[in-house]
Length: 425
Image 1 (cartoon, rainbow, N blue to C red):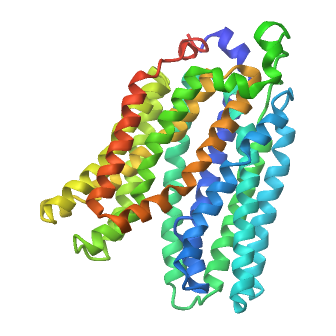
Image 2 (spheres, rainbow, N blue to C red; image 1 turned 30 degrees about the vertical axis):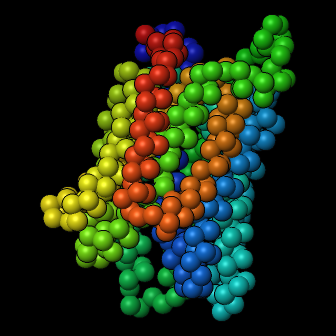
């Protein structure tokens, strides 16, 4: 980076280290209390209702996504965003402490009350983390240049994945230990997660932020009070959000791969471990590769390749289903490799692209609006379950391929941002 770039980003090294510490420790903490595995498993100990268990990820995702537009609108004109991170950090800590204490104090003896504590935790943690996320992305965009950002996000996602692997090993040992009974085993997981959340929070608060430069109030800038109209009129934003929605429809099938492997392909339950490893490795490799690619070529190429990979997962599952097993069943872990790789494109691709196309003074609104719109995706697993129940696995996979394929075609029409060459030499 030349001297001019150093002047524009004077705290690049410091902030990069802080972002990576946050990525790694938050990734480990969140994996220990995963809303995809650990929390549903905890809920399963308290109720036999599939509906209640299924609501875990839906409540979390909705609470994380939906309020972000309101948060972004509230802070968009503030020259410094760090002060607005603190309430979110406090909220996350309180939420985690709430359910941890409930577990240690034996609230599980009253399943309904414990389930209430779990859903309160999910809602409070998700809303609080959403508050953190809006400012986090804005600070990232203003303190790390575009090319360095792609590399940083790739390394961060890889570190988070490695931390997740370690968390997975710890989860297996604690939940499988014969001397640690319920609910002590889950209480330990939440306690370790709470401890790991501390360095993550400290790293965020140690970020060195340069205040936003004031924007001249003329022409388009004078109209920016009507931010909704600006978003609606921004063709690039509309197209990337439509693309993101279509690609995210891969979530129609992702909860059903394991069930399909067991019920249709007759694969043994032990292979679930291989699926987890395959998905983790796919995400790790893709994070490093996409991070390097984003640094050199920008986020658009990540969106395009990642969209194709997202379609590959249900395509391989469909081929295995039509073949009725055989070699395709043996190769089924490849479905999870593709799924893990596709999961790497959301931050490196879509979020990074939005950060590039957003006006500096409206960046929080663009991020918040995009996430709030994506809140509708929290219902996709419900639709996927209905479609599977009404048709078949083959139909579910085919519909998913068609929708994600449309997202890939939309990605081909997106235009690269000139910001890729604006920040760095």
